[in-house]
Each structure stands twice: as C-alpha cells, then as structure tokens.
Amino acid sequence: MASIDENILKAAKEIVVKFIECGRLSPSAFPEAFQSIYKAVDDTVKAHVKPPVQSPEIKPPSAGQKAPSAKR
Image 1 (cartoon, one colour):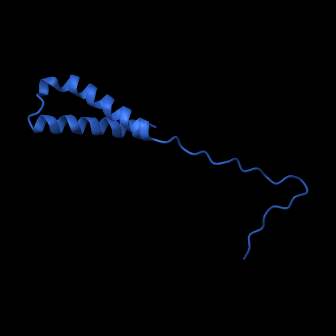
Image 2 (cartoon, rainbow, N blue to C red):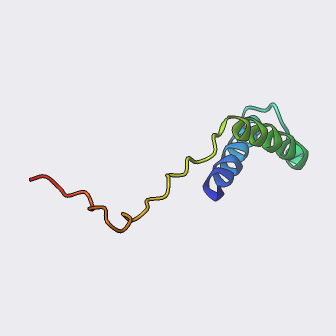
Image 3 (tube, helix red, strand yellow):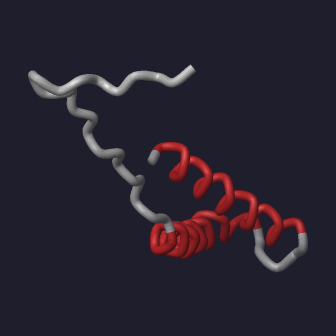
C-alpha cells in the first residue's frame, strides 16, 4: 500500500503546483489547498482500489496420492 500512498502524495502535489503555476492559487494558500486536494485524491483512489487477491494455499499431496507428474 505504500506505493499507492506515495503516488497519491505525488499526484496531489502536482495538482497544487499546476494551480499555482496557472495563477489559480497563491503560494501562501498551499497548505490549506494541499490538504483538501490530497484528501480528495486519497478518497477517490482508495474507493476504487480493489484489495489484492490472495492465491489459495497449495497443499502437498496426502499419503497414498501421487504427485502430479510433468508431461514431456
């Protein structure tokens, strides 16, 4: 999950920087704007991320059963 959080942080930063570059936001408003943009990006991403699928456990063959052999 760390890489998702890292990407959310980078995306929020880029959005705020673009707003400053375009003149839609003053640099002094950075802290407040960053918090609200970060929360919006975080909520959106985490609402659409599916939890990882866990693979089923592989059990060794029981006594009396043969292990599958590879065909050549």
